[in-house]
Image 1 (cartoon, rainbow, N blue to C red):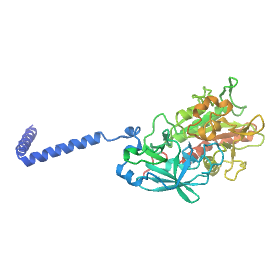
Image 2 (cartoon, helix red, strand yellow):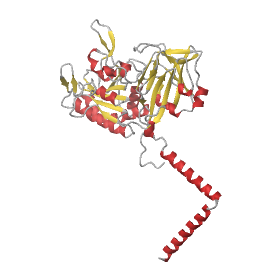
Image 3 (cartoon, helix red, strand yellow):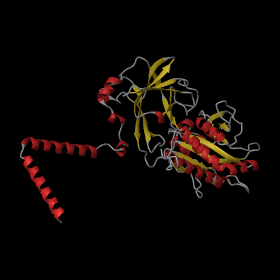
Length: 450
């Protein structure tokens, strides 16, 4: 009790001393300044932009006016007109002509991005496949000018018409994403006092937290497919050893678990009871577009007289880079793949999808498999084939990097048994290939001491 009383007395003495000090003008002024600075500090901390606030922020709001005026030119001697662009997976391509799937004048060109603030320059090559071009995930936060080298002459890229793209969000990496937009307008930087003579192309990149509704990978278990043409359901193939619908769903769930362990958000196109088609908003492709998936992995079986090991089908509009990584990882993990690739750029076990033929016997630009044709957005002409009209809303959407992985051949008992013995390794390999290709480190093992 005595200690408590002594403490109270000391506290009262301190208050009296503080009161006497305030009678000193200098001390009083200093006290007021300290209080004011403390209030300002608290205000700045409380009102600082959070990651949630940045979800709605344009990158222009983060730019310094003087830096923009100093580093951005209003006109250029050498310019190059682009008329189209697209995103497939996490890669962006620009085109001199409206995209039609054919060879474009920009194919083979070197494309250079220049960071407006840091003046860092990054170079890419447009090799032709829609999965080449600018790797958006590799870009640091910033605003970038776009140039091309045309016959060794550096030219500033511009559009004839103004363009303001929809926001694109990259895959999750360490619980963060990059929000990317394309801008092309003479007035884009007018608030900074920069009045450009053409609609020069800029790419803005903002580091941010992912939106809850977006996903990274959509896995499509084969079988149980609703056929809109005749109002029937294709349950998939099967025999006494295996059933496509249940086996593909099991493999999909295994793959989902392994990808989620790497920090990705993954969903399936169906469960054991649902029977979605590949068309419409609630269709297998539509689910991916609505949730902005970047990768689409379809799983199924084939019926063939020759194949005894897994094979992959990919879009002929791609260079097959992701599929090559899957093939490489499978082989590294001891999975056998057939030597069926006719193209030198494709690894073992990979085939390009075929094109449809019209009534006159001419090849069209539309692929056979909806798993590939309807999931690539603009890159693979989703919603444009005759029986794909219910996907027309996605004709100009960003495309998912798609693979149709056929894990077993119903016509071969050897193939079925091989899959059943190795399905865990196959799921692990596909998951590792996806995360390696997109350079996703994943979560740290809790047992790690480093």
